[in-house]
Image (cartoon, rainbow over all chains, first blue to last red; front, side, top):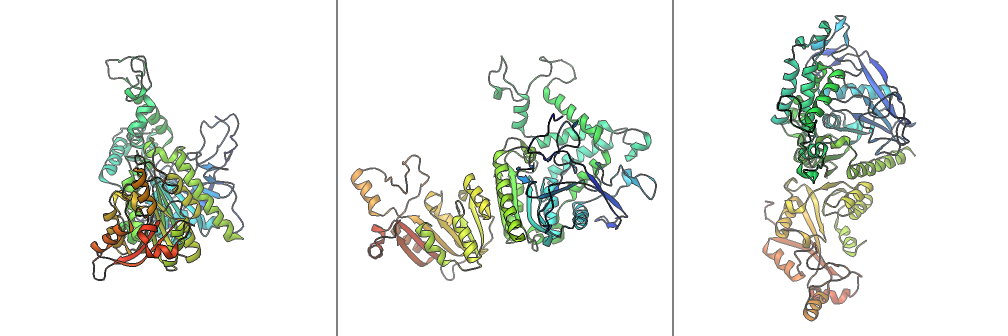
Length: 399
Length: 203
């Protein structure tokens, strides 16, 4: 918990619920008659409404990207390293908007919401939503906020996929599309990990075909397993070695330890937790399973699996970008093995083929896929420099 | 602006698409964007220089020229630039071939190793030339493929390259008349503007 709010924090923030009555037709053919979006904003919208930045969250993210909800919060929002006064996404300059996506479990309409048609939980009946559906709902939120065109739309991982979709579906509404740790679509390996996660959830005896709330229970074990598998793919081998490998009397150099720190200093010769990494994964998984909805996890992984903007263009992503009218900035991270640099470069190549304006940086970082969330100096500097330039553009246009 | 840059900017058509290989801090592309409304992309690997590009609003892609340019389509740019970088790449011949494939026309500038100072340095001191402009020792220099004006002329002939303009200058724009007479001896910077020979395929 923060004793005092740091100076470069957006401070205490309160999310706001926006209700939408206009039915949303989904990619699956189904329709959401009405829905709510939970939204957080930081900074001030200028008179021209031209300084808006939309932040798109990744698999387990939500609308709470920066600041604190109360002085009792243990941690700030998920992208607090990057959003705040003087930070790369500078709230002194920009009006920053972040929302919980449809199907989420942090306040927006999702499987844990009440279905007005049945007066009970949506549960497994909540329609499968895609990145395209999210972006459509985000565009309606932009309408509601009076923002015709975002100065920038920014997101990492699954968030980056939403940014890509924005640039394709609403070319006139995006000034700059900024994506990090992203791929044009999932590979078989990516989908395989998602399927293991889904199987862990659906195989939990407390899952009850997604109707666990009717049984007053939660499939915590399944969600925990799903998160453990996911978490491994977010970290790099080197990050784990570093995190769990200290120097000891026996191993003078931490690098020789390979991250094999023992939890109790000796082996148990049983099947309990022996190593720190095991206990860390248990802890992360357990905490996650207490707050994250199982049906939402299933939906989010499906949205990832289904994402492929090239399907409407004979598999040629460059054709998908044909009408995009924004500048693009992409980042990849050297130890990211979920979406390694080569996958991000596929997008860059498609953008070049489409003749678009694009910048691309490959950041040396040890932290794996998670690097996009963490303070990595070169990445911070580049994003800050780029957005300062965007701010100068916005200011020049306004005057 | 470096004299070679001041000269080559005249060859860039307004509104054209320009690819700058080893674009540095983006000075040239930024100038061309502002003065000629070109659509530019720069390739660079130095972090600080890339950052300078981002600050100037110059599109910059982190890409190592030694690893090829196969992510660029044939004929996708009007002009491909390679200024003061030829001597630092691993495979200059392959890179120039790729430039000819990607660009409708190409511009290359390089320090002329045939200059009398370099010749004198080696001839009289018996050591690899070190100057203000190329202040490296033989063991730490990024410049691994020096050539002379004569060498590059021959290279162009052998590789179906149609040289549109060849200009040779010194760093201070002096000796211009004399340089014209003895380019390989007096010239310090060689500037070539060239295309594929008529009929040569953009393979």
